[in-house]
Structure formats: C-alpha cells, structure tokens
Image (cartoon, rainbow, N blue to C red):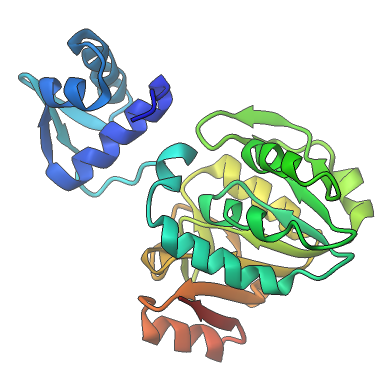
Length: 257
C-alpha cells in the first residue's frame, strides 16, 4: 500500500468507520503502517472537527454525518464502474470540441479516452486532470485560476471567468455528491458547488457522470437544477424509478456496463 498523506489517511479513517463503527488505534496503525502516536493525532484532529467520537483505545463513527473523501480515496471506490461510465461518456466528445472536466474521480476517468480526439481543448479545475493530460501533447489544456483546495485537488474561487467566457465550452462533465429530481445535482462542499455552478453557466451542455450510489442522494449545496442537466450517465445498478423520473423531466439517461 502506497504511503498516504495525512489528509488521505484521515479520509480513509472516516471511510473505515462508516463500515465498522468502532476501530482501535492499533488496527489503524497496522493498516496505514504508522505509529500509534500518529493515529492518536489523526483521531484528535477528526474529533475536534466533530467527524468522529473518541473512545478508549480508538474511535467510533458519528452516524447520520456526511463527510468528504479525498480524491485518492474516492478513486479507489468502484474503479471498474467509473471506467465504464467514462468510456460511455467519451462518445459525447467530438474532434474540435472544447470540454470541461471537473475534479471528481469519475470524470477523471475520462482522460484515457481522449487521446484519439483531434483539436480538442480541455478546460479543468482539477490538478489531477491537468497532470494526467500531460501525456497527450496534442490536447490543449486550460487550467482555471483560483485557490487550491487540497482534499479534492481542485481549484476553487475561480477568478479567470473572463477567459472561460471566451472559450465557448461545448460540454461540461460534472461529478456530484448526489442527484435527485427535486434538488438536481448537489455537493457537500460549498466551495465545490459554487465553482461548479459558475463553470456550468459557460457550458452549452451539462453531462453528469454518477455511479448508482449517487442517485437519490442529496448533498447540502445544490449547484445545477435538474432542468439544466442535459445528460446523466450511470451504471446498471441505478434505481429504475429515478432514471424514469429523470427522463420524464427531460434528462437524457444512459447506463454503462
């Protein structure tokens, strides 16, 4: 297992507690190959931020709480499903397009499928996407200017909107914490939702790439209403009733396998 940063390790601790409720310091120390003192510091930090409860010798999950995983942790979840969704989404990219890719782990999976496109411009607020696109020198990459948000490796507080307005983005590919017919696309970070909302306004077409776990899930911060979502691409585990509801609302829905 690759050595995780402190932020990635704390994110993984929260994810583990969602599945096991209570975990000991010793278990975490063995899992991440770090000292017990390091884990105690992690648990102290997370408890101070009310993300878990300290117990003797370990930690306990706080139920009914939403938390944000790091990009590294999210990328390890359902990688095959995300790859299938991204492969399907790549069909919507044509030669000569200007597209936007956000900082989600599912949209990141688009990158390997773009290499054969000609005269393609990719706008992104994702550090990871921009780094991955270095492998494709024929693709023009435009990185949004703003402030780095470490946990998502994304740029927020965008201050290059004038440049974006000049680019005429054909299609924006967005991930989300969740989607519902009532709230549209939502996130659990205000910074992420504000940034996505701003960039969405520059996109002619908005495409949401969401695995089945994101359907009928609602985050605290809406950023694109359902009547402005053009397409949703999910997988065959998707809730059929929601897919039908989205279609009745005018959203194009596709399931990838």
